[in-house]
Each structure stands twice: as C-alpha cells, then as structure tokens.
Length: 558
Image (tube, rainbow, N blue to C red):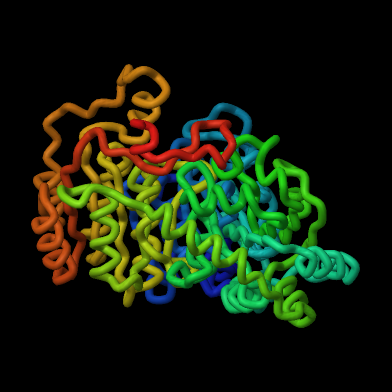
C-alpha cells in the first residue's frame, strides 16, 4: 500500500512493538506528529519539558526494561538538545533510537532555518546513524536502526529524516520485527577450555561484575557461576543487581568509592574474573598496579574491550549469558574456604559507616531501602548522592539501579525516572538527586505532574556541588571555587508551583515521615533533605592511585 514517509515511521514503530515515545514537536517533524496523533491509542507520546529530558526518559525506559527506548525531536536546536542524552546512552550501552527530522532535501547544506547536520554531530556518540534522503529506503532504515540498537553490545542509533521525505508517498509492506540473536559465533571452545583451567587453578579468585551482565540478562547463570567458583563478588555502578547484593559472597562496589573489602580483596586475589566490565579509570585507579598479583580473565561481548584499558591473560568473546551457560556446564565445584573466610573477616573489619545521629546521605538511602524492602527502582543523578545510593542500597535484581555511569551526566535522573515509571507503572520509582543536579533539569517535574506519575524526587540538599567540593577539600586546599549554592532556592515552593507535592526534612524523623507521606500520594513528590555541606563519600581512592590505597575519613584524619 502507498504511505507517506510519516505514516511509514509510525507503522515501523508499531512493527517494533513500541508503545511509548518521548519527545518535543517542531516544524520539521510536524508530519510525523500529525500521524502520531492519529495513532494515539496505540502509541502514547510523552511531551517532556525539554528534548534532553526526552532523551533521558527514553534511556530510563530502555534501562528498566531491556527494550529499545525511542525519542523524537525536530531539526536544529531540537536535535542538538538530544545530544547529551544520546552520549549518555552511548557510554552506558543503552539501546535508544532517536528520530529527528530536518529541513527538506533541497535546503540541506544551505544554512537553512533550524538546519543542523545532526548525523555529523552524533557520529562519535552513536552506534550508527542515518540520514534518509530516499523515502523508498525509510522503512528498512528504521528497522535496521532498531536491530543495531539492540544487538551485540547495545547503543543509541539516530535516524534523521528531511521533512519532504515524511510527506512523499511510496509503497510500504509490513514486516515482523526481526529477532535479535545473541552473539555466540565468537565463543570458541579453546577459550572456554583456557577459562576453566584458570578458574580451577586459582586459590584466591574474585569475580568482578559490570553492566554487561545486566544487559545480557545473565542473573541466574551468574549466581550459579559464583556458587560453583566459590568466589567473592564485587561490581561496578552499571553492574548493580546483576548479582544479588544481599548475598554473603557480595562485597560491594570496586574502585574510587568502592568498599575497602572489594579494593583490598581484588588487590590480593590471584585470579580476577571480569564479567561484562570495561575497566573504567574510576574503577581501576592506577592501571599499572591494578590487580598486579592476579591473572585476569575477561568475558565480554565486545572484542574492542579486550586489552583496551587493562591487559588480560585470557578472554572469551560473546554473549555473557551464553558464556556462563557453557562454563557452568563444565565447571566442577570449587572450594576456597580459607579465602572466603578471609573476605568475610574483611567485611566485618571494614564495614561502611556513617554518623549515628543527624540527617546524612547514607541514612537517607538506608531509610529508602527499609521503606521499599529493596524492591524499588532507584534512579540517581551524578555525584555524592549517586555514590551513597550505590553503597547503601542493596540491589537484589538487575535493572533496578539506573544511573549515568560512563558520561556522568548531571540532570539525567529525573528524565530517566519518568521513563522508568512510564515503563513500570506498578513499580515504585525514586530519583535521588543532589541539589546541583536537580537544578539542571528540574523543569521535568512539570512532565511528571502532567503524566500523573508517582515519582518520589529526593533532593540531597547540601547547598554545594558536593562531589566537586569534596575534591576541592581533599586536593585543592579548600579553595571552593564556584561550588557553593548559597542562594535562596525553595524547592518545596518550586515543586508546588509546578503542581507537585513538596516536603522538607532536616532530621531523620522528618525524612521518614515525609517518605511515608510521599508513598501515599498518587502524583510526584519532592522531598528537600537538608544535610551538612561537609559530608563526604567514604571510602575513597585518590585519582590515579592504587585502589589498595583506599582510605576512610577517620583514616585521613589520623
């Protein structure tokens, strides 16, 4: 049948099972929005307050479900406003398809009104991108975009469509969405053999879990592997929930703000098994000394990650779920009783601690954990509050901790929480933000109000840019350059002005009461939590230092 390009866009979204699109309309994309209006009973559109919010919402939708998130923007500034969100998704391997529309084909390259080469701009931060100048290629391009976004190591894909292509007609034939196969052809038997030999020879193994284990859906296989290998487990920000954080083998996060047990344990192991990690600089510290006594075995779907940041002794390339299935089939039960007892004693010796009185970031997070019984979807912005949320909330399931790890995008969390809540209407979604981060995209509270979303926005308000100030305190002789937020912002009034409910808490009992009240609301709630400006995230490893040199606040004072 003959359809316009705009009609083909909507039909292809329906083919792919898309039920929600986040976006903001404009002149170049009007034809697509007109068709979207006609299909509003099949695809819901969430109008965000800013295109960046739309890109983060699509990201949060994708991270919380494993599906491809979709966002729309018009040409020029509409398209460029997506860039930070696209880069955020790219750094954390999140499947997002961004559809933008541009000026008509005859006006491309002529500095036309609201024209921008968005494909050129996003080339370094997308898995692939397209500009479609022939309507006959539009349907297959969109289908290919979804396949690329979801396959292998996922990532964002951008499709840019000139306005005249959305208006002209061509023949369209519906197709079922193509299945996305797992990457198994690269898994070699000899690599599995080598991996098994290394695991069976190890006396002090440690398992290091990253976001790849979440993406591959390998929770059950990972749990079996941990049991068979009889090894402790640490993780990255992206790996939270891939292994149940309440289990005895779990020792917490690794790296700059990882636990002392994880940092010292990895520094003392004889085999580090890296499962879906990219060895970020914030994790490894000094690359020359990282796990220097250990052999390193890496499992990853992306061959480009092998020997990129850390030299490894062996690897298996392919889908993690399939790799672990094959390893588990052949791995004999290991027994490392003495090593596991040593790690257990380290956990007792080096617990995470914080002051017993007063309202602090760690207390807030633990109070949320108790109130939700660990079953909420926790979203964060970036900074001290993000680290506290990673340290003190115990994630039992994958896709329940949503945060910007690679790019570290301030302003990410509220949009992502909207996407996660739209995708999971029956789940409790809580965004934990610093006051500096909240200011970045606080306009999205209006979006949450419009959509009647019961998101709880917790502002950890220390009146400073907390993590930057922490570095200034520790490494810049307390020169607090441009990090003090000493204005008169009233977040309760701000929330109420946008139609949300607002509470303020300066003590523990006030916060717990506000949280209880927030959970009883059927719309968005903002809780302004006032904490001390000098509160810090401990333990810490100095930038570029050996992770074994991690220190606490008490140790630094001593």
